[in-house]
Image 1 (tube, rainbow, N blue to C red):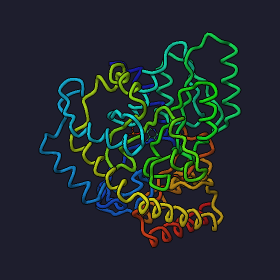
Image 2 (tube, rainbow, N blue to C red; image 1 turned 60 degrees about the vertical axis):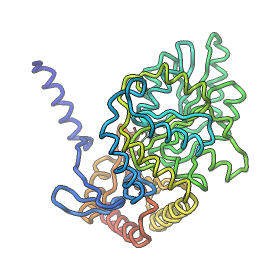
Image 3 (cartoon, rainbow, N blue to C red; image 1 turned 180 degrees about the vertical axis):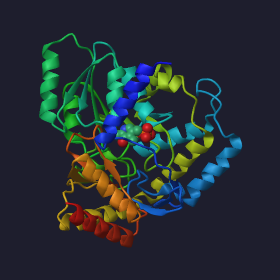
Amino acid sequence: MNPNLEKNLKEELDELKENDLLRTVDDLRFISSTRAIDNDGKEFLVFGTNNYLGLTHHPQVIKACQEASIYGTGSTGSRLTTGASFEARELENNISEFKNTESTLIFNTGYMTNLGVIYALSKENDVIFSDQLNHASIIDGTRISKASVRIYKHKDTSDLENLIKKEIESNNKSNFFIVSDGVFSMDGDIAPLPELAKIADEYNCCLIIDEAHATGVIGKNGKGTVEYYKDKTGIDLNESVDLQIGTLSKALASEGGYVSGKQVYIDYLINKSRPFIFSTALSPSTIASANAALNLLKENGEEYLSKLNENTILMRKSLNDAGLDVVDGETPIIPIIIGPADLANRFSKELEKEGILVSSIRPPSVPKDMSRLRLTVMATHTKEEIECTAHKIIGIWNALK
Ligand SMILES: *Cc1c(COP(=O)(O)O)cnc(C)c1O
């Protein structure tokens, strides 16, 4: 026992509470892709999940999950030992086909994928250039890597280029990596992939993008950032991106992560990436669910994506027209900047009373005084649900501000 440590922890928690920054876990059960109940059975309409296409409750996905469970509820080991892997192999091949890459490797979460890829590939004399607003799992991957890390200003490719030039001048560095979210998780904006690709080509950098909020979310068929820019500019950047990292837990309606790219990287990771080597593989059901969701996305991508876009545009327009401080953008991640953490908290509590769940995002996830509501719109929300929610948000904002 260490009474001093316990006292210090308690003090830190009290301080968080005083500043409206204490985090607690609420229990929820999803009864459909958009509706959940709490412990008292109260029902909420949810505008805060990453389940962009609502596929967690699609009958075909649930059926695939159930059917795979006859092969056991757990995988029994790491993929390199006894870990059950028929489903994993099938999904990996399916992702490679979808992403038009040579090979894919599944990890247990998107978080572990970033840790496992970044630290395994980057060595002591290497340099990782990382966007200032990259996801925590990328930051943690760069922290456990022995490479040096240079943070460039958010989406600022001239800052990135200057940092690269400086490293070249100070020489004796070996490999350079550029790592960026494809769609940024808190602001919902999209990485400047054409410029990143140009810089990566010019300076021989390995370019890694994290497609967690992009796969199934942007691009005409939901293929992510590369497709988004192909639609927009006609230029195919597929060859310029060395590795695409992603998650199975967002649009793909399950859990797990993946990395997709050239075979040599995948073979190397199988041999050197500790989160892959030393962790039990995902269960057959978990992987089969993701695979079923991916098959649906492949079959109906255009339809899902056009519905998601339609909903996104409607929500953004309704809030903007009412004068709310909505961060501009085109993705279904819709941040409404509130400012102080306590006000953001009160806002989401008021919405909760009205039966709507939206997360309030506070420091350290976002900078101080940039606390926000972070709304996410789904393809399975109805027009009426969106209009009614926008109406309630506007009403509460006018009462609170
Ligand atoms: C959610 C997210 C992850 C983590 O994925 P999990 O599967 O939830 O661990 C990684 N990167 C980004 C950009 C994310 O938004």
